Length: 361
Image (cartoon, rainbow, N blue to C red; front, side, top):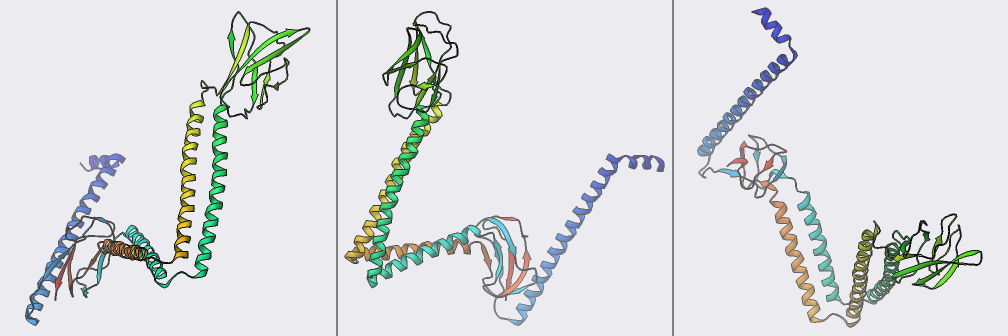
């Protein structure tokens, strides 16, 4: 029997499984012992404090259960069972980065609104008027720069669309074995349409005519020569033999290009962005002009009313943000002793579920 047991335990898989089972059993037993001990300690402290308070005070003893008003991950548990605490002591807290950020934003908005209101009450000084004039000039300068830069962006996306995959497509009226000429360069025009290229022979040379977007002619050769005056070049294949039955068409843009739709969408997006961006820049000018006009004219009663309303609005937002932050804390409502704690750091708290018990004095 002993030998068989030894053989079984010698098997790595079996020995690992046995070890895991033993560890699990030990963990469960330890947890049960800990929870039982914690519960018994809590009951003992509660009993002792209740008896003590009954003997030494005519005030009724209150066993309070405390909970978080909102859910979230528990950041800190700042007390332990048996601790005596004063009213207002923070007992536990949730992660509150977002609520703290909201408080800071609300404080800034409130301070800004209050300052603006105070300035209206006190009147506008000459330096403030000059600052408003500078702000207006800056807004106008920014508008001009915006218009110029947006024109460049739109022009670039239009150029990319018009130049996408330009090729010479043969329009065959008879039989030809000629390879198509190569189109290179960058089309600098803005007009859409087609170039038609036809070849003819004169004397000992070959020439081509162009029609459509532009009219002109050139010499057929193995080097690239201008195709019109808008930046494109045409190069015929080596050992080209003219064929009067063949005409080539270059479409601008080439809607059959693999990248045409991508460039076309980018162009339309640039147009929309241009409209919105310029409108925003114009809005900045209008706002700066209104500020200057207001400072020169002085404060009106309706301006004071609006400024006061803004102060009250931002003050309310600050109070709401502060309230949201307070909901991430559990604070002792009275003096007392901690009798039970049902949470640990890192847990996720559920709203309004009791997590701490406090026995008041």
